[in-house]
Each structure stands twice: as C-alpha cells, then as structure tokens.
Length: 432
Image (tube, rainbow, N blue to C red; front, side):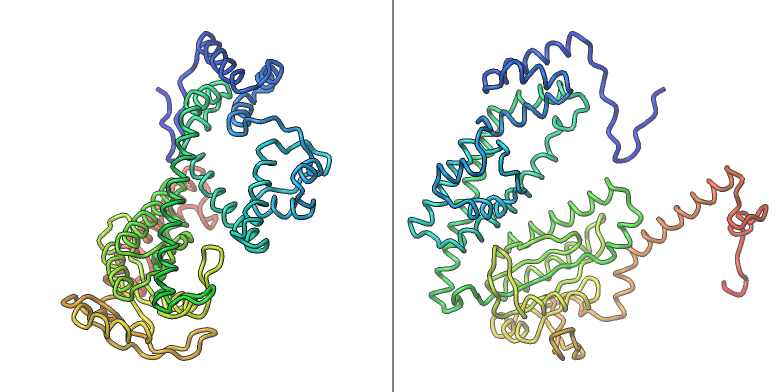
C-alpha cells in the first residue's frame, strides 16, 4: 500500500504512458509554432527538459529578443542611463550591455513612458516613482497568480507546458482585462478621495488627514514555531482574508499586510472605530486564529508610493504593540474626534499615560461598542487561553515525540538508562 503524503507534500502524480506524453508534446508543439516558436527552439527545449519554460517565454512575451540596451535607447530617444533607471524602477535586474534581451514590446513601453512625461501627466521624477509602484505591485500579483497555477508545478515539463498552453490563449487576455478594470476602479476611487479631501481642506500636497490603524495577531511567533508550512499558510491566509474583508466592507483601505499585522487607513473616525471593534470581535470568535489587538490614531500622514508615513502612523504602530489581546486602543486625538462624532455609539475609558519610543508621553483610551463589556486586565488571561493551550499542546507533542524517538533509538536524554521514563513519570514533588 503506497504511503500517505505528509502534510504540505504533494501526492505523487499518476504515471503517464508514452502515448499520452507523445500526444501532449504534439499539442504543445502545435501551439508554440502558432505563437512564433521555431521547430529548432522546441526540439532543443524538449531535449533539455525545459519545454514549460519555452512555453512561458513564448506566450507571455510574444516577441523575439533582438535588442540591446543601446538599441532601445537609440530607437526611443531615451538616454541610456534613464533607460537603466526605468528598467530597475519596474523591478528588473541589470543586464549586460551587449545582451539581446529587449523586444519590440520593451520599445513600445519606453515610448509610452516618454509620452506620459511629454503630455505633462507627470514629471520625470514622479514618473520613476510611479514605475516603482507599478513594478512592485505587478511583481506581487504575478507571484500570486503563479502560485495558484498548479500546472506550472507539474514535475514533467511536457505536461506542464501542455496544461499551460491549453489555457494561456484565453486566460492571459482575461487576466490583463481584469487588471485594467480593477486599476480603473481604484484610480476612480483614489481620484474622488483626493478631490473630496481637497474640498474639505484635508489634503495639501502629499499629505492627508486620516485615521490610521494597525491590527496585530497575538502569539503569531509562537504559532509559527510549531505549525508546519501548510498550517502556517492557512493561518496567514485566514488572517489576511478576515482583515481585508472587514476593513474594506466598512469603508477603509488595507495599505499592506505584514505577516501577522495589517495596516489600514480610513477617512472617517467613526468608520475606523467600527473597523477596530469588528476586527477584535471577529478574531475572538474565529476558531483558527488567536485574538488581535488594534491600535488607532488620527492626524496628518504623508502619502508616498501607495504607502503612508509620519508621526500618526508611528503612533498607531506603537499603540498596537502595547494593547491587550482582543482590545481596541486609541490615541487621544482619535478619542476626542470619536466622542464628538458618535457619542452614543461607543464606550471608552482612559488608560494610564504611556511613554512611547520617539513619541514621548501619550494618553491612551480603550474603545468598545455601547453595551459591550469594558476591557480589563483581568479578562486578558481568558482571552489568551485558547492560544496558550494550543501552544502548550504543540510543545508537549514535540517533547513527547522527542522522547519517543530517543526511546526507539536507545538514546536517553541525559545518557542514563531510563531517564526519559523518569522524566515523564511524575516530577518534582515540591514543584507541584
């Protein structure tokens, strides 16, 4: 009976007959020919077992690589140093000066870059800043898309190429159209926010007046030491899913996810408080995750490359690090604005002033919906209990596994026969 695959380990693929392999190769050859690949390129890729790589290169960049950097600079009028700067800004590594790596698509992209600057849509420095944002965002999207394509993880290059080429003609254009649609929607929303903030006087240059929040999952470091990769990925995925859904549904925007922490911004202080409370409650009720703590601050922030900076961001980040699990803690200015905007929706109470790194002494407040129990230090152990029990259980399992392995191998922990048994049979009577 074949062995069961371990957690996180893919099951072995069913064997493929020679006829099936030959039929897959014929399909791939036909598709790649239509896409412009030559028989020599296909034969060489098949011989080197990299047919899937040829399929990706041919279908994703359907243009021959025939230009050097100097060729592109000459054909576009973009100085060589600016071309290198653009290439790096988009997230691509440097290439040798005589390497034929550029295509007609690269020349077209360089022309578009220059045209945006010529039309006055942006100046040169801002254009490079935009290129960096586009490059980093597209890289993340591409990595996510590739990880979701099981066909690219097939151990057989012919079968992987067959699976990829069978859907690429339809899937790739649809993905491009979806990206364009989502960009237009987000561009519209961002432009409207900027215009409304300008009308209200909340926007000046690269700064805006916003509520900033951080949500931090408690005990993630402990969990990451005891969960295997598949289990840890499930925890992170669930954390991101809950955070993103709650923040966006209630009017906020997720700025970034950093493992066990989510940063978000909100225009209205009431919406920010609702998001904070909802996050704390949702994670407390989730069986897969531990509690989160939420920190909220209000004030001016600097907008830069899709991210936010400044003392308000630093304050929210510092607050979340000292909040108790399952609680929402807000800064003084946030509390004052919230009481003025929604006096009947939330309860709050002062915490002792704290001295925060680089920020000095600040007054903080706990925040809950009306009618919900007031957070207190006495409740913290109860809220931590699920995480602690899980961590303790995992640690005990690790210890028992080690005892069992040493017993089977005849290697007691301290070299004394029977020492493992003594360790597990009772303990220090004075310590119980």
